[in-house]
Structure formats: C-alpha cells, structure tokens
Image 1 (tube, rainbow, N blue to C red):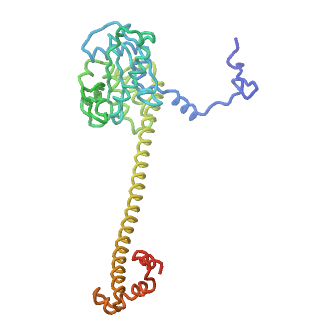
Image 2: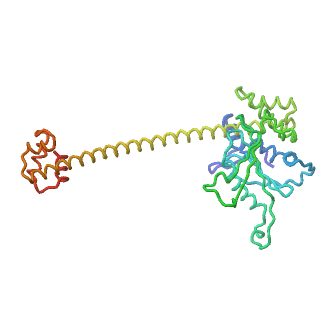
Image 3: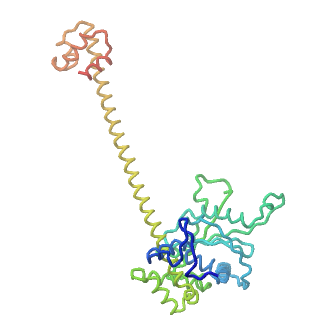
Length: 358
C-alpha cells in the first residue's frame, strides 16, 4: 500500500508525487467547496442526512395528522434540475400511497411553481411506474401527488396560499381537463404556522435560518449562528455533526440566491432598456408618419390649387382674374401659373412634383 507522501498522480504526461503538487489557496478551496455544495440545508436535512427519513416522516405526519412510526415507509425519489436550475432546493418521496414534492423558497415565491411541478411529476412517475406497466391495458395505480412549497423568506407572505396551474392557461377550458395545486406554507418562525408545533425538526430549521439572518451583517455570520443554535439545542445534533458542511452549504445557497437576484435585476434592466428602445423606435416612426401625412396633405392642397389654375387657363383667363377667383395675390400664385402655362400637357400631380424639385 502506497503511503500518502509517495502516492503519485499523472499530470500532463508525467508523474508527480502528492507532496510535490501545489497546495490550493484558501480562496480556491472555499470556491471549490461552494461549487460542490449544490444542495441546500433544507435538502440535506430532509433528504441526504442520516436522519433524513426520520425527518421526512415527522413532516409527513405533521401535514396529514398521522402518527406513523416506521421510517421504512419512506421511499425517496430523485429528480434533477426541474424546480430549481443548478441548485437543489427540492425533494420528493413516496409514502402511504402518495407522492410528495417539497420545495423551499427564501426569496420571492415563483408563481410558475405549478408548471414546474407538472414537469417534475412526470419525471418522478417515470421512476415510480414500471416501463412495461405503462403500456398494459388494465388500469395502472399511481401514487397520489401532493405539492408543497415552504416559504421561509422575510416578505409579509400569508400563512398559507395556493397556486394553481390553471391560472396560467391562455383560455378557460370546459371542465378543466388538467389541474395542479401547489400549497404554499409560510414556515418563518415569526409567523408561527401550526405545522411548526407538529414538526419539531421543521420548527428548529426555521429557527436556525432566523438565527443566520440575525447575524447576516456580521463577519462569520453562519458560524456564529451555528454555535448559538448548538448552545440553545436548535438542530444541535445535526449542526454538531455537520457544522462545517452546513456553513459551506449556506454560503453556496445565499451566493446562489444573490446571483439569482442580480440576474433578475439585470433582466429587468435589460427589459427596461428594450422597452425604451421599442418606444423610441415607435416615437420616431410616428414622427415620420406624421410628417409624411402633413406633406401628403400639403401636396393634395397644392395639387387642388394647380388643378383650379389649369381649368381657368383653359378658359384663357389672365393671371389677375385667376388670382381674384382664388382670393389670392397675383404674385402669390405666379409660380404655379407659370408652370401651368409652360407645361399645359402635364397633370396637376405632375406639376406638383415639379414644385417639389424647384
């Protein structure tokens, strides 16, 4: 067995010992760790941790007013990158003939969650239903779906709310052939939703996030929150075992949230610029259209005057008489009179064009 100091790694066609490899900087290490932690603390606590099944069962009992004891009834289902892109903040599992999908929001609630859950459910059922069973003629029983979003942000959001897929439909269907409901539950510890009294791990998770926010403006805020919660018995065992991992997960999580907020602001700014560009083009087009309409009206009036002069010239009326008939000064209409007499074969519109060139 090779010792740690003599272990070799191929690099660029040659071999170097582990001791000879350049040590990464502290900043590079933190950055690498943050990239590796794509799960949120919520997902780790209720899906990945050694106590995940126990926690899920507790949350299931709280939602359904049941008192199941066996964690073996929990069957976890993994679906990637549907509810949240590039960051795992959702979990799904089967229990008691139901398929439950949980998501957590610490920022603004996304109103497209029903659409995302529809896509999520399809992917989940692909795992839960045997491929051969899908094509049999007899009815295939499937777990009843339930969709929940736990809101843990600071906005003044109601204790409970429901989002419906049909709210996104372009038209109102007869009988509504497809509906999906997402129940949003506010688990902010200051809101004191009833579910927090029924599920201690969810209550302590909410208190932990609240503690993190309390130190958000201080250096080492997450570590301070972890230490305080351990001392107060809030997720104490979990944080004692995974304090450093939780720190990295939260740093990655809040970096992701901040990145999303920045991207949303950038998108809004780009949208504002695009609206201004469109408005500017429309204003410019409207001005051109108005100018063209004015020119057209002016030319129509000019052509009408030329036509009147032509008719009077046919009757051999002198300039002075034509001016009287048009209630104009002779010198005012002389340019038009000269054009008419010089080009008697041309129409009023053609003579109008000649005035534009002169």
